[in-house]
Length: 480
Image (cartoon, rainbow, N blue to C red):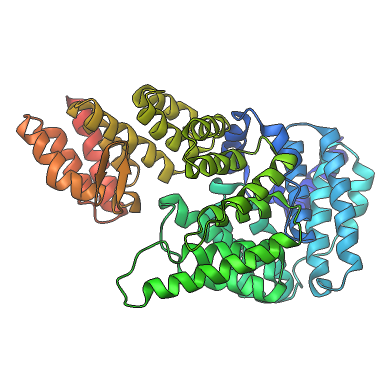
């Protein structure tokens, strides 16, 4: 008995030294991600098309990520199916020449994941055989270490908003160790974009995001990488500039982007993500009317993924541009039912304008629906509620409560510093509005105490200062 327990302990110790999703501390984020997907009515349908990837290595990591989820869910059949699919992709990679210098690292991640699947299934003999032969990472080259980081960054990227910060952190390490892998540059650029857009969809493209998308596409000429590269170029001109030749450069850039996008469309892409990105570019074209091409892309996606929330969102945008607001609202609503947060805010805006819905009850329900969202979107939700109380209901007291809740999440967040518009309200930024209009209004209504709480958070200097001010708020609340 003692010998068996020693062997069991030894096996567990070996497993903990391996590099794979089971040891990458993704559990907390995957729970939040799974809750969001579970709340969607279309989770299974979206999962069936989620196997699309930019390259075999990304596809391999997606299958290994699904192995982890299957073991977590005690779904042995799914775990075995995903590891078998991953093995097929690994064989494809092994037969190619592109990743020959880093194949040992890729094999390590695959077999490490398989070990955990076997351990969970209590197939100990096969597990021990793999553990005896698995490649040790201690003598890996920089390129191979970069691949370990890169594989990890792909898995974090699969968690979307819940993994974007870790994906950026780890993809940077991958690029530092191995700058010659286009996929690592792509994953880094993609998640820098997610970070940027989580603050505001029109936020300015950073030099780092631009650089990594450019490198990824230049190195590979990969169609998926190319679509993100073109999208980044379009988004680089979202922010207006007073520089004399700005409009000329913007027009020239858009013409070049649309030309390349049309060339890609001529190849009849079947990747639904490529088609969606193309549709969005055509919808946002300013130099020419490309709605017919956008419709062509959306029709193609409908055949592949009719319940995809992004497809529903972009279809709503298409009908909005065509002036068919009845259809636009219908598709914004469908997208919101699939937990598309941005589409749901549009649905509230249009629903309010047409008298189809009352914003406040809908927004309050969203608090529960999206309680696991990243902080930027929690702030957006709370601001929406605060503004609705203030602007539509003239309820200063409840508005103050929700402004305070938003600030308590992160008073230094950029959400408070950019142009804000919702329903019939707009302001240069929330900080300006609170300081110059809302707090003086509170004080005129004899609500100096909550006004001071808001002002204290508006003046937070750093994390230590924030902790102190939140502690003071908590103490004040207990004594009231």
